[in-house]
Length: 163
Image (cartoon, rainbow, N blue to C red; front, side):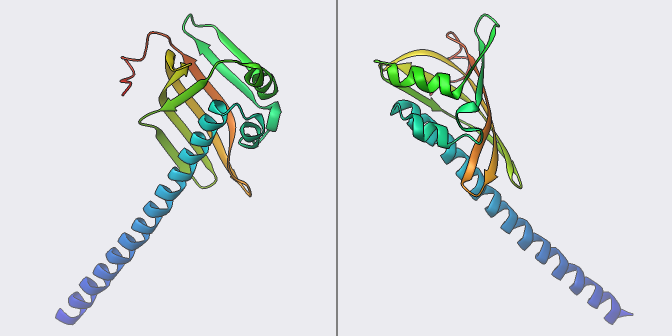
């Protein structure tokens, strides 16, 4: 009877250790994928700052047919295609910079979401803050954006704890 109990305890310990190892491996993989998602959004911000429509378009699964939705401070919802955004971006004479902080990134298999407060600057001056919300899918080309939504809130920077 004692041998049976000892064997059962040994098997239980092996099973728990094996589960722990698998859990750690999944956690490491998830962390790697979350970093890859964050890197995709960083590329988006860089493409905007560099006014590079080709780099921007390459980040979207639908190319220039992608649609941005913005919720303005007055509650209006507006949208434009990436093609329209790119046309305005290359004509802009001012310098744009966007950065986000404390993103919440969720990954499950080949889908991901990115949600974070952000600040938008024009010629070095803050014009607004808001929330960026992106959905992504992992393709043969890496993580690509399938949906882009954001708020435009001129008075929200302190509320959103801008660093």
